[in-house]
Image 1 (cartoon, rainbow, N blue to C red):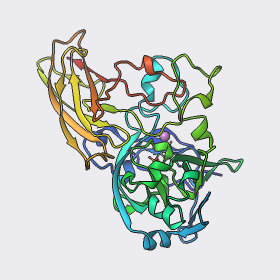
Image 2 (cartoon, protein in one colour; image 1 turned 60 degrees about the horizontal axis):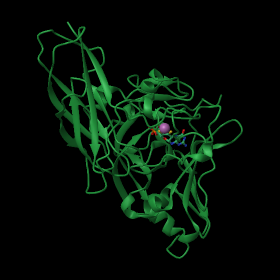
Image 3 (cartoon, protein in one colour; image 1 turned 180 degrees about the horizontal axis):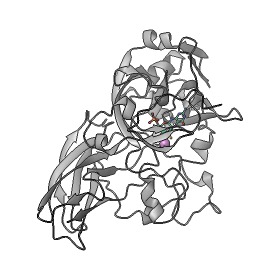
Image 4 (cartoon, helix red, strand yellow; image 1 turned 90 degrees about the vertical axis):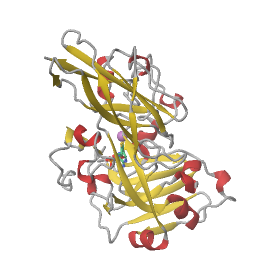
Length: 376
Ligand code: MTE
Ligand code: MO
C-alpha cells in the first residue's frame, strides 16, 4: 500500500481528498492567526507521503559548473547559518471553486483555505549553492535551479519543480532549505525532514521531502512545471491547449478573502453594521497597501485596517490580515453581499469577476471575493 506511511491528521482540517491527502486550513483560523498552527496548515500532496529516515537522509547538489555535494541533515544544521523567514504559502489553485460557477475546471475544489503562513527556518539556498561552488563566474551558464522530492508515482517519477536562478541566488530573496516550521521539526505532511521555501513564489515550487538540487540551463521537465501550473485565456480548453505557449507560474497575483462572517451567516433584521475580517497577500514580496470592502456591489467602499504579519521593506513574504466595520444597506430579498479586494505596492488589484480570468486548470483565481449573508 503506497499510502501506508500517511501521518495522523487534525480533524479540523477541511479535507478535499484522502489519497493523496489534500485539505484546507479551517477558515476561522485563517482570519484570526497571523501564523497558522502546523497541524491546521493546508496540505497539498500529489502523491503518497514518502517515508524518510532522518539519519540516512541527504540532499544531493549538482549541475553545470558545480561540485557534486551530498549534504546530511547534520551538515545542513551545522555547516550553514540558520535563517528564519515568515512566509505565506498559497496553492496556485486556491479559490478554484469560484471558477466552477463560470465553467467546469479540472482540479481540487479549493475554497479560500489553500493558504497558510508560518515561520520557517533552515539553510539559505544561496549559501548551499555557494558551498557547491556556484559563483559569479559560472552563473552565466545556469538559468534555473531545479528541485526533486522523494515522493514518486508507481512509475518512479518524482515530484519536481524549479525556480529562476535570480530568485535562488540572491540572499535578499530568502529561499531556504527549511527543516523547521513554527519552531518545530517540519511535519511529515509538510516535507519532513527538509523542504524548499521560496517566499513570494507559488506553493507548487516549494518542493517537499527534498532529495536533489540541480543547477541547469533548463527548467524542471516535471509534469507540474511543464503541464500543470500555468494559466491561459478563457478560450483555451483541453482540446486546443499548447502547454509550451505559457510560462510556469512563479510569483503570484494579488489576493484577498473574507474569513468572517461566513457565507450563509444569519443576521438579525435590526443589525446596522457588521465586523468583517480576512486576509490579503501578494506574491513577489509586494506589500498589501489597501483592502477595500463593499456592501453595495462595489458602489462605495470602506478601507479596512491592516494588520501586516512580519513585513520587511520590499520583502513582504507574509500575508496581511485586515478587519473593518461595515454599515449595512437595506437587505435585498433578505440578503446582503459583502465584497473585498486588495491593492498591492505595485498598485495591482483584483479583477471584478472570475469569468475574464477563467482558465482550464482553474489556477490563480483572484476575483473579488464575495460572502452573501441572510437577514432575518
Ligand atoms: N512537494 C512535493 N515533493 N510533492 C508535492 O506534492 N506539492 C506542492 C508543494 N510541494 C508538493 C510539493 C504544492 S502544489 C503546494 S501548494 C505546496 O507544496 C503545499 O505545501 P503544504 O502541503 O506544506 O501546504
Ligand atoms: Mo499547489
